[in-house]
Image (cartoon, rainbow, N blue to C red; front, side, top):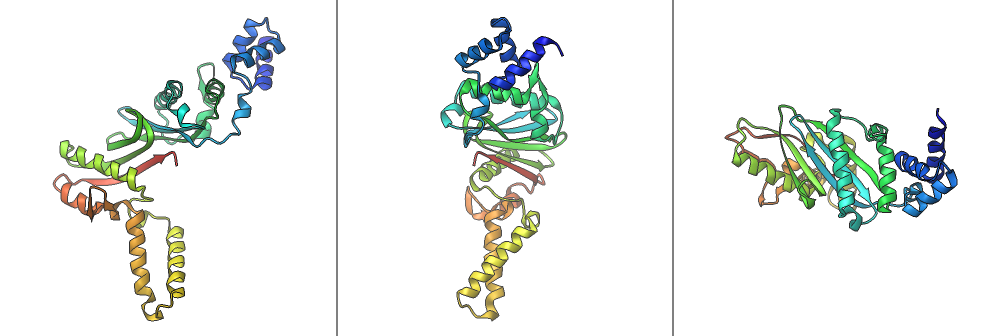
Length: 286
């Protein structure tokens, strides 16, 4: 390891700043560690690590597309003000495009943070942006989805830019023919997902432990209400059907036509083109 590399490593440990920032600081100060650290502090680039302990509940979600992949990435900041800044939005775009270029569906965010980015790592890029923006920034979600030969539609809610907002919902679907009518239907369903936040596509997709927990809760409530034991099971069935209609996409009342559920809307409007939702993804700040 060269002397300069060792100095950079030492300065990074001392300042919490990124590789390139430390390299430049040393160059500007004749490789003097203390002067370089003071230089970084004056530039607001030091001690980014201290900011990483602060809560980050704001931020944004971005979506990035190619012919074969879709990337959904969520980065949290401390304030809405920072999330709306061009610096933050450009940072999100940089990472979204970088993730898209990887062609690695299913990569874990921890592995993503350790990838080489320019002369540094993605994690180091975060540190430099934390120093620049002055807030803690956290990668809270990263999904790289293989959409090759699949149809998909998405909706961005509370948008800062065309592809960035506070909520993004996406569906993967089948259809014999994708026309304007199907595009409108799929977009409306994405809007519904953003508003209603379903847990799963249908009842069979719900977590079995979660279903049992809900049954136990509802049965206890019914028994405590003093209802006759002979009708407990019937009441429980009604309670669970109501629960399913609240948490599963296909059984929810459609936001644009509340008298019908999503399943019936698809049967009516998508029947001609054999429209079928394969899966959905919902990414939100909260």
